[in-house]
Length: 557
Image 1 (cartoon, rainbow, N blue to C red):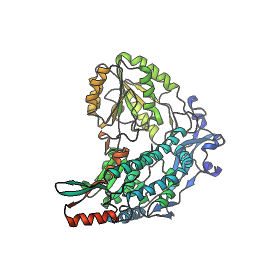
Image 2 (image 1 turned 90 degrees about the vertical axis):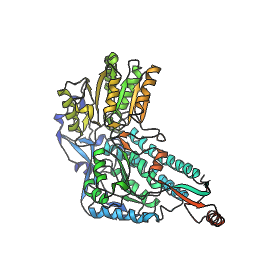
Image 3 (image 1 turned 45 degrees about the vertical axis):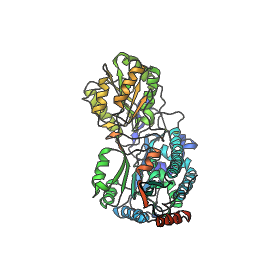
Image 4 (image 1 turned 120 degrees about the vertical axis):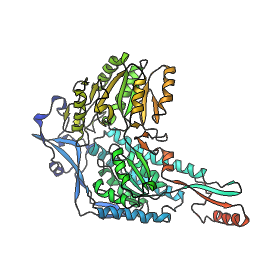
């Protein structure tokens, strides 16, 4: 590490005297950083990828700070991870023009390339990407405070997602390679690309979630405008070279800077065909409305959720609490699939909460590189203030913090707050907290949590805990028509990636699973011809001599 990097990273200084006992020693000094976490910081990203070439940035830079602070003699300094280009509209439009040119109304090299060759390009990319694993993992730790174990898991899961997508495309291509005949008309029905795709990912899974839209969009023959997440942006930098060396010019183009400044003119151009976004419905709606022809804009959206857990009176408490702990607090609750409301039957509320508090108190908290750490600093600058607002609001309407140190804050670290009892008057009842605040409510009638789900603006998942077969069966039927995944005696989660990942109401549009994502970023396209000698001779010649990349019966192994 460059010592000057730490010395120049001063932001939001706070005296060591202001730290409370629970947080004493939580932030290390520079000499306490283990070797397997060190990076040469700060990183000044001066190159950006547009139209298959690296361009040098000479304009304004945006500073990227870590949620990690370093302890000096009398203060704490927030670590400056690095700087990224702050695009103007000119660079943004240059990226757009490159993507439009690469697609070329469907005539470009990439959209007309044989599927087998596109797969080869993606395999080449993945092999190059794997050489960047350690660098990306360390940047995940420093940029968003994700634990090393979870950072490694995110990288490896992303690589596996790519391989699974390749396998799924092979299978899809094999099933559509045949020519069928109906009512005297032959036809081959295959899937073709849609055009220019704008991909914008989230900060909580800046690699995996972003690639869950980027990869299927890419492999189906679309050209890409890629804007990394606000937090977790520098970790994409090592991959720019992989993109450049693996795909034709203009197929992947990077966007950096303020989304409000650069995304609006891109959308207003009307040249974006697909909008792939993971974030909030509010932002998604604003961006979509800026397109001049929203009816022509395809969308694949992963949005917010308010996934509840329902703890029935016959639930196995050990299983229920263990799953609710990980479900509500993995990566500090910063997951769309996190459990953000817990409904527990009043008959078992006390033992449930006692055990929950016990297991919560046992969770390790600290720096991302600490072994077996569960709770880490939060990357969003305003998150501690927001969470305090939620807690204060809940307390004003009768809730209490029932766990020791709940809601305590020091710099970027927030200790989880368990709120009980919560009700519909509180903001936390309705809002997605996306952080370590756990609201708990009791119920006496099962219709109470069902009504909550029915009235919610969100409809992603629910977790139900119980052992009574008949009760569980009666719950499944109404719940599957309100959410898109019912988890029995387990937390809400995305995986396995081959399973559907979608949502109702304000939670999603489109499906982000391996197989379904290929369909989201493509369209069924038919080549048809009447059964006649002239047509049969022509098509046979095209097929036998491989004169068309689309009309083909080649079988990809």
